[in-house]
Length: 87
Image (cartoon, rainbow, N blue to C red; front, top):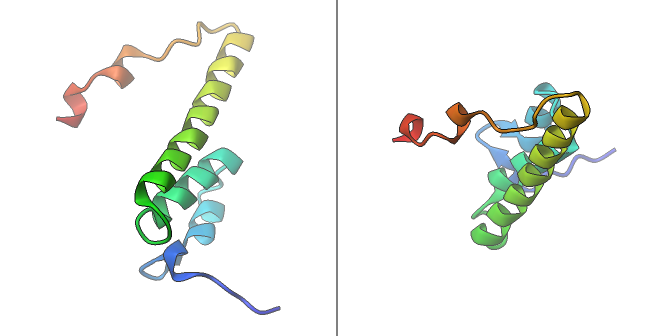
């Protein structure tokens, strides 16, 4: 079987799908990584980043639903909401 991998899915010597498999990411996280990797290299960078956010939001929503189903409050820890870590 022929192997085809567009350049916009490869950074250095690492292909996006190889990283996703190696990191054992689920569907939504894998899609987010795919759109982040190709942002600015295929179509609109803005469009690809919005798609990545869409998949990350879906994953976060699912995590919160699972937390509530397991008896947790589902709240995001304040430590994750603090901007101090990123400045």
